[in-house]
Length: 102
Image (cartoon, rainbow, N blue to C red; front, side):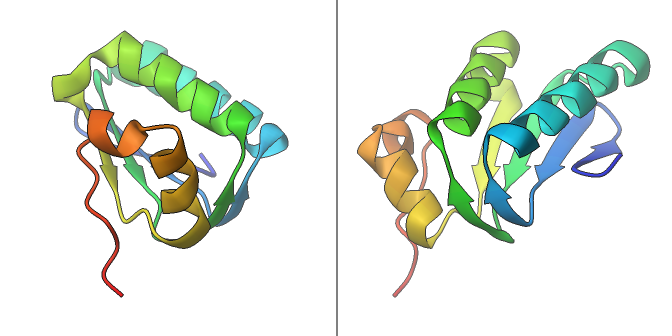
């Protein structure tokens, strides 16, 4: 898989660069495979290498959050424009995100 790494029951999403409509379609396909074929029940989103996120990616992450429930969904390393977009949608509170260090 290109954007999803499986570790036990967790599917970790890594998107380098832009997390936009085209990438979110690829990611959601891979996550679906991780859940159906590999028995994943948890999602971890690592934004360490993500420089941009659009509304389609945010929408699909919210869908995943609702599917796996809050205890099984973790977001890490959101900085810059990615953090700003999540903050603007009040997802920093929902997903317990900490502001990036300056």
